[in-house]
Length: 147
Image (cartoon, rainbow, N blue to C red):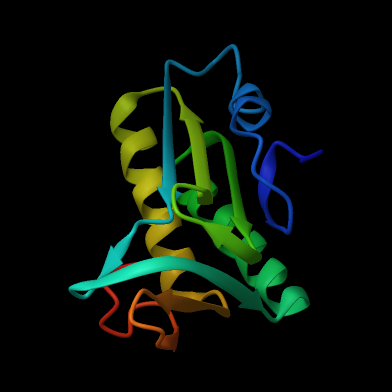
């Protein structure tokens, strides 16, 4: 990611080390990172893998709007979010959020606010494949217990 504040969709694996380096700021006393990973279960069912699809232009615009608004509201020095699209395996990083701030409270609250808003408002859909051969499309917060 070129910018130190923003949102990006990626068909490639997320390079968490490079993103973490993008949070560095000499005024920051705190850095908080959230990594959402693909788990092997959902709703009592075994999950084999999943795929994410998005309306890319709208998703990136809305994601950038969310990150910028939360960065300003919580006085964050840096704020980044990358969400995968395409096929993912169990254990893959599906979404990464990182923020830096002068103090830990702002960093924790800001990071949580970003992931919650991204899950709620960005047009990204998850297609889960289950061990029983079934599959289902899920949209954020549709009783999914999270993405």
